[in-house]
Amino acid sequence: MKGTSDKCSVHNKKDFRYTYCIADPAFKASQYYRQTDAEPYGPRLSFEDAAKDICLDQTGRYATTDKGWRMARATVGVRTGRYYWECKVHKGVELRTPEEAAASGRHTGPAVRVGWARREAPLDMHVGFNAYSYGLRDIGGQKVHLSRPLDYFPKGEEIQVGDVVGMEIYLPSESLHRKIVEGDYNPAVDLDDNDPSDGAKAAPIIRDRVPITYKGQLYFEHIEYQPDKELQEFITNPLPFISSTGGGVIGAAKLDMHPTHPSPALRTLPNSYIKFYKNGKDMGKAFIGLLAFLPPASSLPAHLGERSALDDGTLGYYPAVSVLRDSVVEVNLGPDFWFPPHSEGEDESHDDEVDMVGSDQLPVQKTERLRPVSERADEQIAEDIVYDLVDEVSNFMENLEMGGQGANTAMSGLAMDEDIKELVQDED
Image (tube, rainbow, N blue to C red; front, side, top):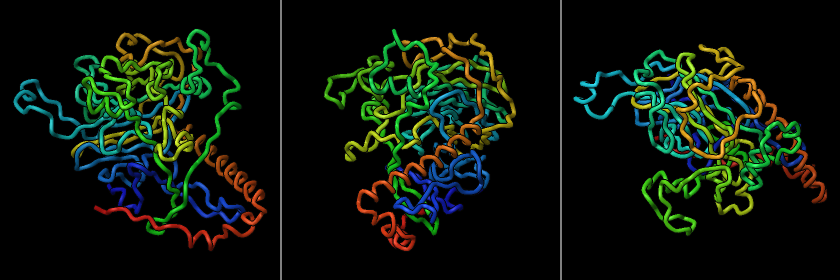
């Protein structure tokens, strides 16, 4: 198994993230570069979007580390709809008797946490560490959010070596999502999420990025989304603390996340949920009312001004794994699953076990087909192609308004190659 550094990949860091790009002479205006992918092609764990000390094999399916908690996100994220993926535990927590656990004290060996994570979730922490990820821990089958492990699996159900954990997510339409984050949502009126014109009303995707090189490989450098200060303070100080917005003392009990919360970052998505499966067995919904992620619920650094509210198309919930001290996991993003889930018909017998993250939950208005994350990956490729064309047309029109100079000479291949900066990252 090789680490990401062995593949000469650049690592995402706190303020920036990186995606592959190539020079495309067919683009005649200033957008001379376009998005691309690198081998191995297809949905997998991302070599760039992974902690520096996590080791991924050459297929991007296996992950391990000899350090503390390290996380890796997949190359594809979910913005709307129902999706499923799986993770097999090859080495995780070693089951102990109550006597052994009492004698040895706190667990210090291999452990695994898996789930879904947003862009703001830190890679050097576990899934479920803060408000930007929802996880399941192998120890006791507990669900984890905001670093709070809560009982979830029935007693006696443990995640052992060889077990397969299935993960399902449901997110409402982007039109309903935008109503939430823009403050236009009315729970008494917005009862139906069946909006056939959702795509037609989609907000513009604006990708603020520049091409760079790293060890001879071309990348786009993107500014990364930043955690919300209130949510950060809550995970750091779970007891009452002073609000960063000047609103006085906020206690843990008052951090009531719901669709109409005054702070967009604390608004939740009606009907959204995450559920887990163990070896094909539906364990019920673990989380209901996931936090919204479209701007302004997610934002870029404040110093960017109006640009801080851009949606660059990468926002969403990503399959994520975190490993600890020589644990080993294997991901399967589909379409050929070890334990294929039922595509229709939900067993709601476990609904009394859910963690009510938000309030004002409504019945799901439609039953969507449960899709493998691999299908979303195909859509994401198509979206990138369209966004590249939109960027090129936009740049072409801007150059025409400037007198046409940019369309002909401003960004020749030679000029771009000379202007691209070389990225340097620590190899420690």
